[in-house]
Amino acid sequence: MVREPAAEEELTLAKEQAISTILLSLESSSARVGALARQEIVHGRRIPPDEIIQRVEAVTREDMLALAQTHFTTESLAVGALGNLNGFAVDRSRLQM
Image (cartoon, rainbow, N blue to C red; front, side, top):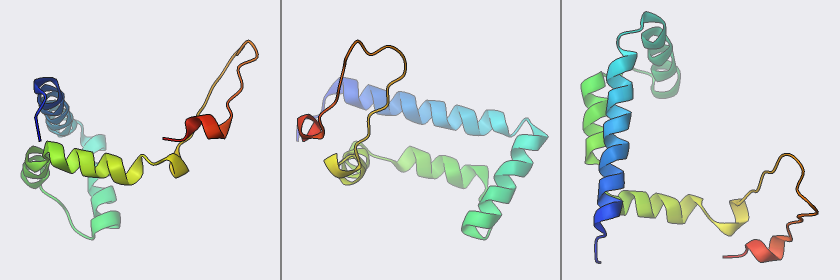
């Protein structure tokens, strides 16, 4: 598979953004408490920031492609619109991929 540099750069930027968000959330006590509560409810344990960061860093382009192919299917596709659409109408058959 040929790798596009732009795709790799986008993945790197997304990882850096996620890691930055994790690290910044450690500075807010309310954000920390909320994260701890969610972790306990969802996973039944506290997940250390280092573990989360390692998992984010381990994500590959192939992981993202597999996720997209699994979840971004025509069956679950949705369109939302707001405002004056000037007669715009969506026929579901035109959304088939």
